[in-house]
Amino acid sequence: MQSSLDEATDPWGIKVERVEVKDVRLPVQLQRAMAAEAEAAREARAKVIAAQGENNASRALKEAADTISESPTALQLRYLQTLNTISAEKNSTIIFPLPIDLLSSMVPHK
Image (tube, rainbow, N blue to C red):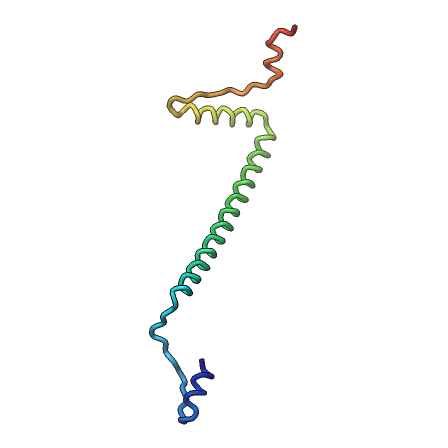
């Protein structure tokens, strides 16, 4: 911009030191391109934040699993706590998973 101004004003002996831009009008196509770029940047940041949240959640789950795996009693208590949470809802059907070995010992073999 400075070189364009100097080129136009030097023949008259004028030196432009400062220019203040008061109103800029951008073509609609450029406005759309800028908006699309800003939206893409926002989406990229949102994906990074979501990925960090997933990473933190998976670390917390791993720590919880490690803690529970140290004690079979802790696993049983967690199981009962989960059943309690489920039963707090109205009209709940609770399915108790049982090991196949337990069921096969109850059924007479032919």
